[in-house]
Image (cartoon, rainbow, N blue to C red):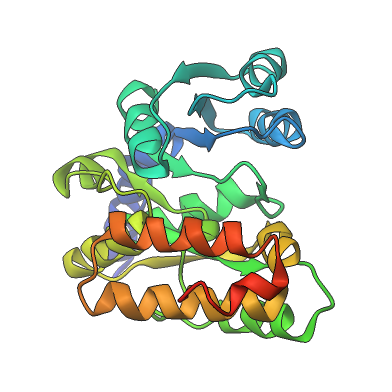
Length: 263
């Protein structure tokens, strides 16, 4: 290759880098946190993401908390919106109000890994419009350790809302956002995104609270989840599933009543 050709090639490469860099630099994130009676963790959740570089906006969507969640979120620096309860409804409301080119949906009791936003940016620069993380329940319980390990697999059976979905706003709007369902809204939106292209996987794991497992019992809770998940794929409506889930949770307060709950 002649010196002139090498010089022209280097200039062309430089132009590509220059042209691509502004897009990468301009990437901004808006974090949407749905919350309902999350006073114990909302302040820390907001503070952690506000410190991250590239985060333009943090929106907490409160579904009618009675424990001061909204006030604590404001004190930590979030914008707070009021909404009807329901994760799908709340996250759609937050997405409409949020400022940022990429939306990040984070549960209040979940913690992003170090350098999470750099990892998200890398996934987006590789050409993906959306992605998730693996999940770590941070528990020594064998079943929760297994679930954490399985979340590293890239399948529709092992990726859920705790994985902190991030998605470019244009893609989110093109698929109609979250369904306004009381349950399995995360399963549905991930399915919609997969139909439009492969989901990216960011480095690291989201630290998810195991509280719902510990409250009911790890094995019992997982059996309930599997039961409802099977019914969902058989076509049972999310509202019906929510009623079943509520009944099971209520029955779970009395271990002897669970067996007769039908879930």
